[in-house]
Length: 448
Image (cartoon, rainbow, N blue to C red; front, side, top):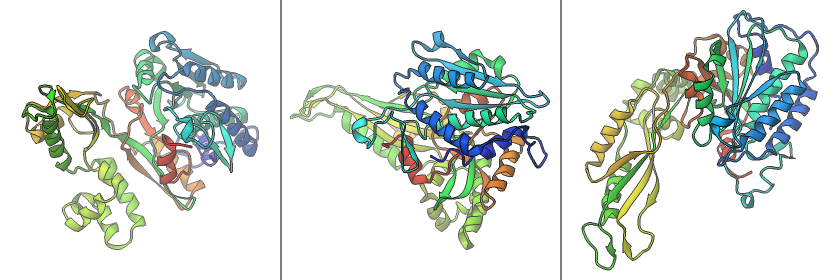
């Protein structure tokens, strides 16, 4: 994990206060970037050793770790919501004051991590081991590394005495990996602490890297909405040696087959349209032309087939349906009283959940199949790109990666951003690291 690669430009963007000027103000005191990187690596390794696996979470220990680190830098952090969130859980909040001439910017990360099976790792998953220039540990990508990069950026500004036009707000939430109760509680209970926040950034960016070269930096301006459903069919239990028409399993399988064969309509949102136009520069000839006007190109069979063959492109152009879980009898020779399946449905930001559900029920065309929501979709959002924040990222990216460009991306997964977007804050996903797609997909919730 190369912690410094985006740490310096991130710090400069913050130092500039995101105004229109071309260059950030110079530090009053010199910043030793190599030393800061070494320190950041050490802090991250210690942070990874704090086991905040969710469930159960136990993020209070992580919040105390962050509070103590910030206290050494003269930054007072508050541990909040321990009662509301339950035993062992907490939110963390801190603020570094600027001159108040511009509204604040918030740096947010989540402290919890998904479980790790130690037997499948080559190193202990909570060791924070440094090997061959990489840091290993659950949360090294998702997302303790980004949290420490944020904190080290703020520390660099404070140590350097860089004049700030904006307050810098630091937030660390629990429970992003399970139910987002941390961000939801913070936004509901502490909206007053966020009243002056104009921009917020956290996870959710999507970069493109080839041979350690950054091709583009994707700033997440939107994300799909999770709309999980459980489909259930009831029947009559009996001995499986005497088949009956009241077996719920074949009826459920038939419904799932109709869902699996259903092609959801294609739809291009404004942010996705910009994304395709931006990346078209990397595709010569006919394919570049297709991407420059993706809405029209999807009507061309050849263009459509090529575009939809990319799993990410396909996912950002439509609602998706993935059949992920089945449950029937607990014994082979028993026809069960009930059969159920869990379906992962992801909606584009501007889609109406009720309309989508009505369509899916029509596709299934069987009133015996009961749909039960497992997750209510979060607030939809698509943040603006014509903002000081987006322009600052573009400017800093040009200075440090002149051959790369900046574009808007849609996350097909989910983050805590909707909790803050509903407060009127422009929220963005920023990935500060040069991680190629293979390593990112393997490393976020995978082994090692």
